[in-house]
Length: 338
Ligand code: KG4
Image 1 (cartoon, rainbow, N blue to C red):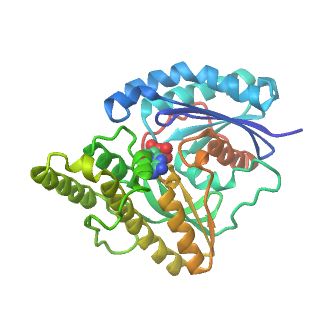
Image 2: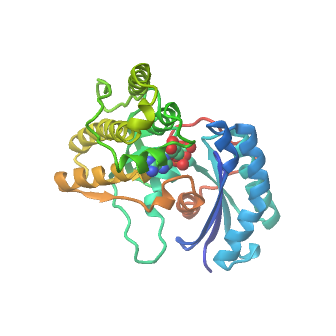
Image 3: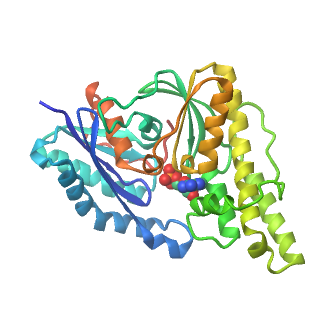
């Protein structure tokens, strides 16, 4: 009998459901919420309501694409946290309801674990996967971490941001330039036509493998403010160069510590994950760094970098095989580390 796992992800503003059979991905449906664009950021109450509207059609579509009925499912996996509590409650309640109704095990998944394990999503039997130990640079809207991945459930944070995440730096600087939310993909696109050496922004001087992005944000804000004093069209006339210079600074900061971590741990493989790992500059820079260090780089498909249930299903499958089941009285958690 096949092990068919249906997974639900609802930690922020994407409602997603995926199905995997014996570890192979059969469907991964994502409904993104456009409602937040008008507000320049995710509005928690609106996110929670949109999840309620989306969850039934998203789950039905994931089952349809997988060609499975509810009765053929073996377990339900879901994101327990971290994330927005109102959003998590929708996915958690739905997952628990399905598990009770079908009388099958429930598997709770840590969203950050799932991002790291997104390297193990397999669409075909012969898709390659990393070997342990490897380093994962986990960069998203809420996190910037260098993680030493020793096994599916043994992860050590070697360094992390002491203030803002890399994604926040992208999004907040984008807001300063009047770009829509989330700003990361817009900066990525505009950077391609800009001069990355035109503007210099400050970089943090922090010991060890930790990150900081708040100083960069301030330095960016001051550059724009001073530029506007001289020229009211400063942003429009320099948009691509501002984006390219900002993106280069963020990449330099990320890669500097990543390189240190590679040399300290002597790992032979490096992976990236989280929304910011969709950035084309980040992807190229990590590949180049790994080539220079003579090690293997794992660059995920773009659709597996931002929030998705395929990674939750994959992490849930590992837990299912070890019989690490969740229980109905477990509440979701807004904050939790790896
Ligand atoms: O992992 P994710 O989907 O969820 C949260 O952490 O909430 O990451 C979202 C973040 C946002 O900050 C977004 O701007 C950023 O990922 N992002 C990007 C790109 N695509 C998404 N940042 C830079 N370049 C991109 N292409």
